[in-house]
Length: 221
Ligand code: GRF
Image 1 (spheres, helix red, strand yellow):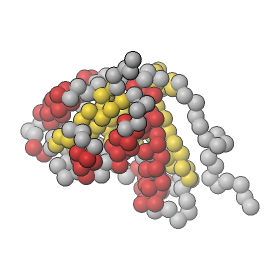
Image 2 (cartoon, protein in one colour):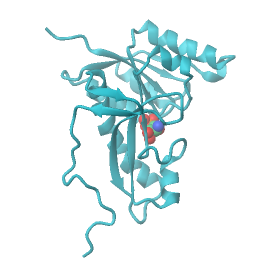
Image 3 (cartoon, helix red, strand yellow):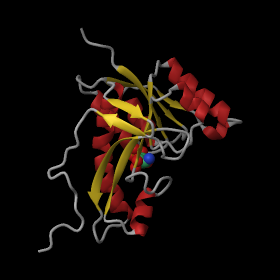
Image 4 (spheres, helix red, strand yellow):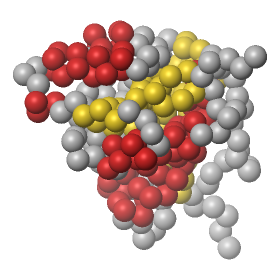
């Protein structure tokens, strides 16, 4: 007997490539979740087109059209409630959610961020990494708490920063890993394979890299 798939609500503000990665994962029969609703605070976000193309309800809740943050969040909660959403995935959603909103989905709100947190939280994380001169960058999927990119980490993927990288090339390399990591983290989280342990998590899945290390610089010639 097939168990009902977990219903995801994806909050977006932009192009939606991470949303697409989740939609593509959900198209696989063995994936334990489905995207039940997509909500954008930006009426022109391309992510909405991706949702419509996948036949998923695409809802605009424009923060500029609401008198307060509470009214804005109430409208989002209404859209999520109307589609039976159980878990919330932030995918390039550029608004901070209140503790009250997060409390409605306690321990069931995830986010993807383009840095190896806790380094470089907030905006322009890839540019921050370049400006700081790190040799290894990457992305993180984490539970969302009331801070900015401070929630318990579920998974991370690292990439090298190449000598002639700019914000565009580094962002593109990190985005490839985001699209791999986010569906995996969602699968583990919604199937109970991630347990919260204070600010940390225990994940019932082993790391995977060829050599269990990414070195930059690597071996000298
Ligand atoms: C991604 O890099 C994500 O990590 C960050 O915003 C970007 C959104 O990209 N939070 P997309 O809209 O999913 O393509």
